[in-house]
Amino acid sequence: MTFEAGPVSTSPSIPSFGLHTGTNVDDAAALLPEAAASRLMALHQRGADLHAAMPPFEQIHELAEAKMRHTARIKQLLAPKSEGGFGLTELATQVVAERRALERVENELTRQQPLKEDRGDRSAMRSGNSRKPGLWPMRC
Image (cartoon, rainbow, N blue to C red; front, side, top):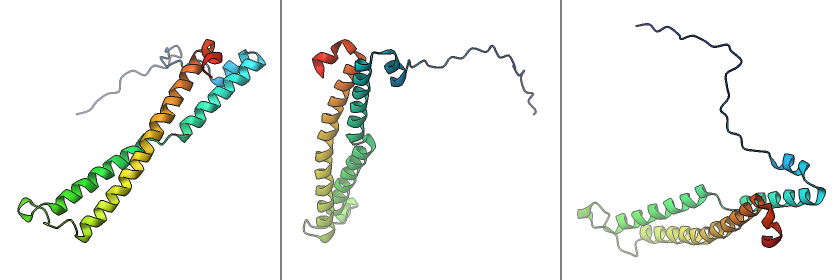
């Protein structure tokens, strides 16, 4: 079986359907008076700083998965041999090691989740402020 290529269009008048995202910060700042331009740049810098300080989703997701793995491993170690487990006691070295690892992961997860929520809320508030210039004096 052979296929023939379709016609090739060399016309430069093919319309582009790209997304128009508006002007960037530098373009918008060029149109504003000096005081407003510096305020706009400061708001965008603050947003970038808040975003950089926020733990990424992947990091929190990895911790949550590690917590589930350690929990499943402990369950497997404690399960009787008749159920496919190892039939170990709570004081077995492997169980104690897994519990310590689980505790470390849980502590890290409980430390990072509030950071993401708190900094995410601040970032969202900042994002709303930069999109509504009329509210700048009221919220910042």
